[in-house]
Image (cartoon, rainbow, N blue to C red):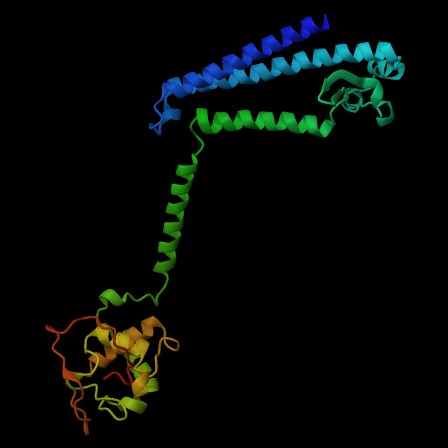
Amino acid sequence: MKHKFTKTSVSLSLIFIGLGAQAQDAASAAAPATDPGFYDGLLANGLLLFGGLAIIGAFLVLYHLLSVMIKVQQLRIYQEHGIEAFKESAKEGSKSFWKDQYKRWTNVVPVEKEEDIMLDHNYDGIKELDNSLPPWWVALFFVTSAFAVVYMGYFHITGKGLSSKEQYEAEVKTAEAAIAAFQAKQADKVDEANLVVLDKPGDLSAGKTIFTTNCVACHGAMGEGGVGPNLTDKFWVHGGSITNIYQTIKNGVPEKGMISWKSQLRPADMHRVASYIMTLQGTNPPNPKEPQGDEYTPDAAPQDTTAAGDAMGMR
């Protein structure tokens, strides 16, 4: 009787599992592998749902059949060994629902009596113990099973959940928006590739203040030159464009005693002082220093250079 029951149980379980596998195969064949919108199709969703329900049904039936088999084995073992205490415990009524459930969940045979509930199955020396699983393990199994159903429905059937690719793209857009918002607040952001001469009075006034504080010692109060070259004529050692002057201030000319100011001045301030220096062109201050370098012609000269220097030693 036992073997017949076991064969029937296994056969039914395999049938249900086979139905679930066939449903999954049909769902996979319903959409091409190259189609990224597979789960958006109504037919594919229906087949996937059927496959999922078939698999869940197969597990439920299998669980029920295994429970029945275990109960039959328990009764046989109890009859053979006369473990009346457990029979009475199973039949005993409880005063409340929760106490009854607690007894059912914790109906575990003590370790010293496990030999009495050892099943006659033997797999290469490994025997099967017919004891109850821990309540927390059983509860976790049902919780994870329910979560799997909800997860599958939310992400793969309803289409409301974002795929990993869609989530990545959304996060990239969010990050790009955050970067743009951050950069918009950076007043010191200067693009050396397309610098323009500042002409607002506020910027030129700030540039003059920086020049007076840091540059007059080498270039004179009016840019006429001293230790450093004259900044008021048309001759420049490292180029006379706004980009040339900015890079000279930024990187310095160490071999000529001109320090790099990028560690002391902000990019916006270096831009302001470079723009102020360009306003000194043609001012003809008294006692100018002799010309140095090459004559700078705006239309012919390149706007970018890798030469370095400072507003105070820029030529």
